[in-house]
Structures are given as structure tokens and as C-alpha cells.
Image (tube, rainbow, N blue to C red):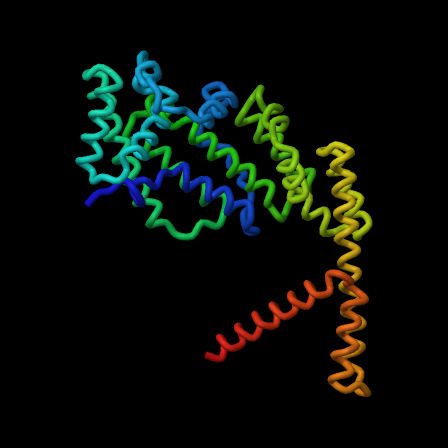
Length: 339
């Protein structure tokens, strides 16, 4: 029996968000030099169009007539269809369509309701075909793999809705997915240095967003800009000495954050360095005690206990609990491996 929860409610928007997260953590994603973009150019779809699409719309009010008074196929159609899916999801196919039909009849005149219902039926078929295609896909490892999903999706949209309606219904959604995939592919390319990546990002912004290219960078949140900068320059940083690396990271912070935030980040770094040095000092002294053949086991235990107190002070008990947990975890893993 067909149900709109689970597989049939598995929309590509949700899937692509997961894809973007995956792209940001794997290391074998290479940037694509393919400039044959899948979504519309900046003249057809501007940055403001995509931002408008990403805004939430409340279809639970009395404005449904207003959203579709001029055209049934418009920038609200896709979000409205998803709203209908979610609202009447715990039903079989026929029950779902009947509930949607009644809802539309209450929202607009019967002629327009019937026409919108027919478009919605095509949308449900599209969602099911897409879900089936995605379930049969192999592992995705490169930017080209992910863009291939979008291309398959675009072809299916044009086939089922016609090019004009596909552009209107899915255009902004498609572009909101294509851009981060391409950007993340560049940022995570291990073969490129930071300056090369930044040049590619500028080219990508200009080609996909035109006159709005600068707005893309200006509207990124500071922490996102900072972490992306670190990733973009990962190859450069890996080839630097520790002092040069720290100096470069400080420059990145000063580009993005206020002086107050930069100072706080440095204070955190200093605390972490101090803790790291403390643990290194402890491990060195601990090793000397453990390797001293002139000490009995009891003497070693007493000396290590005192060493922990002297090194970690009030945090000594917490440190010992952490050691106990790590030892317990190791014992459990060893037991499991034996079994």
C-alpha cells in the first residue's frame, strides 16, 4: 500500500542537504572543471530568487487563494506541494489524493483546484521515480557523481513537466543545490592551494550569480567563512612550520572576526596549548616512573597518584576517571575481538 511517509516523502531537497554535508567531510572529492551548469544562469535565476525560495512560507493561513490567483505554476508551487505531502502523509495514495482534493476545493474555485490537482499528481509520480532512482544508485565519491544526480533530476523534471514549468517549479531549488556542491568540490580539492581555490570560487560566483556574485560572499556567516578559509588553505598550512601556520591562521581570523573575537580565540588557543604541554609533561614523568625497575608496583602507584595531583590539581580526579573509562573501553573492545 502506497504511503506518503517514508520512501514516497523522500524528497530530493532533503537528500541533497545530506549530500552537501558528505561533500564537506570526505577528502576524495575533486572540484569539477565542467562549466556546463545544470541550473539556470543569473539572468533567469538571481541570488534574490534563490534566497526567496529558501524562505519559509506558511500555507496554513487564508492566503492560498492569493498564492495561486494568477498562475498555478509559480515560485510557490513546489513548497505548496511539499506542504500538502506533509499535511496528509499518513494515508494511502487514494486517501491522500482525496484529502488534497478537498483541501484545494476549500482553498480555490473547483476548476483551478482540479487543474492544480493534476499537476500535483505528476509531482507525486516524479517524487516516486526519483526516490526509486536514488535507492538504486551506487556510492557517490566525486563532485561529478553528485552533479550527475542533479542532471538526472533535471532531465526527469523536463520530461514530466515540460521545460518551462520545470524551470518555474524547480529552478530555484535546483540552483540552491548545485552551487554548494560545486563550491564544496573546489574547497575540498586537495591538489589546489588556497589562492587557486579562491580564484575558482570567484569564477564560479561570477558565472552562476552574475552581478550578485559579491553578495554571495558578503552574506556568508563569519564562522562559516573562517572554517572554509582554513579548509581552502589546508594544503598551504600543511607545508608551513608551526610558527608560520599559527601566524597565517591569525591573519585569517583578523580578516573575518572583530578584534575582541580574535583575542578570545587566541586565549582559547593558549589554554589548549597549556593543557597539551601539561599532558606531555605528565606522560614523560609517568613513563619514567613506569620504566623504573627499582620501584615496586605499590611505589609506582603512589608516585603516579601524586604526579596526577601535582600536574592536574583540582582536575586530577576527573583525569583519573577519564583514564578509567578509556581502560574500560579498551578492555571491552579486546573482549569483543576475542569473542
